[in-house]
Amino acid sequence: MAVANGTPPVETMSHLTESHIKDSSSKPQLKDLDASHVTITKTSTLRPVPEPNSKEVWGSKSCSDHMISVKWTVDQGWHAPEIKPYGPLTMMPTASCLHYATQCFEGMKVYRGFDGKLRLFRPERNCNRLVMSAQRVVLPAFDPVELEKLLKLFLGLDGPRWLPKSRPGSFLYVRPAIIGNGEELGVTAPSEVLLFVIAVPWPDLAGTPPGAAPKPPGLKLLASKEDTRAWPGGFGYAKVGANYGPSFVPQMEGRKLGYDQILWLFGPDYQVTEAGASNFFVVIRNKTTSALELITAPTTDKIILDGVTRRSVLDLAQSRLTANSPYLSSSENKTPITPLEIVERTYSMLEIEDAQKEGRLVEAFTSGTAVCVSQLCFVLSFLPPLPSPEIPPLALHRHKKEKKKKKIWRPPTNTTQYFVTPVSAINFREQEIDIPMSEGDSGLYAKIIKGWLYDIMYGNVQHEWGVVIDEDE
Image 1 (tube, one colour):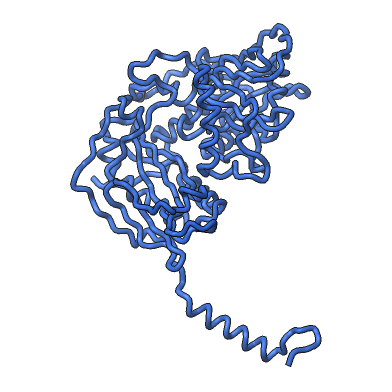
Image 2: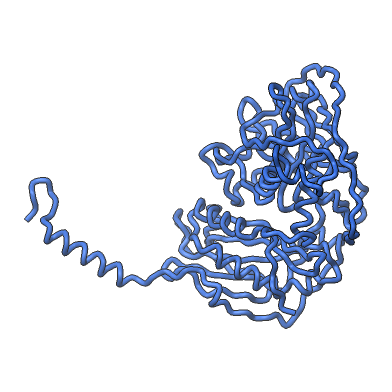
């Protein structure tokens, strides 16, 4: 008998609760991703390994011998993972990813170290971010630790052949992806999902393709005129395909004009967000305090992607380049370096313009997995032209090269280009903003951070960020 407010009596509520529990317990428990259930099928036909810096590498069409494949279904959850020969995917024309952009991916690298070992760089961050991106487009979550286990098995299998020990300093680009699949065309969450991972020989994007004329060092950026990459309340913080496809139009237009990528601005005050698909940093001397600040856009408004390299740049700079840092006062550091203040905040091209006019602009660079840390060369902004005053000279520190006790062999590619390329100018309001290069081909701080990242990735130093992979010899 119900009371006046419509609430069932206690005995009835108890019965309903018990019935609900019984109904729930009768439903099959969805399975989690479990790397221990993986089946490994080795290929009987090995794929050709392209030569470094070849047309095949620049074409990004060569994949390693195997791939990871894991199916998810709405009634079962994650199926047993497979590591199998590389090959085409099977999907229906109604697959959700083909119609509703239920898709996300990651970008990471596996490195052949100078100590002969294979390493991933902070893979847990990529795996966690893939889960976040998946949930943003209604794809199922999973335990990121299990994906990392699968990555190690997969790369331990293909690594010895595709990254031989005879080529230390080389790497493969690793692409995990999740796509919505299934037979239904309805505008709804997919009933089937596929997680897969491939590995691709990747070119040094700061280098020169075969047959092409060498470029001056540095990226040339074209500031966005009308296009906006991301906005508050959107999905710019997630690594989903919908962030990339629309950006190709202005990117291709910029390429025709001789620029490498788009510098994405946001809002009427020209907030700086990202450069192409990379995070953007600038070093400026504070107008009030005269302190040097390493500035980058924040992740709190969810406009930019919290890149793994971005976070690593900030972590290294915070621990080694700030005031009272043990590194700056240690015997390891032979060159006087002005400490930095690390700042994550919203800032605009107007600030960069003012800093250049007043002699406070020190350097700028981008960071990302594809090109790691790249120093900027030139940015053109479509804004009303203003007269540009004469730029006062900057007194900049020069970083003297230390003589290393042990000479380490470097790969034949231009590693300075790979990690850091020079900033020469930013064109804003149709006026070039010259960006100092205290090292001739780089700014000081970008060069230092690049060196630290390089040594961690390639095993020149032992660091927790460099995760060693057991190889299937």
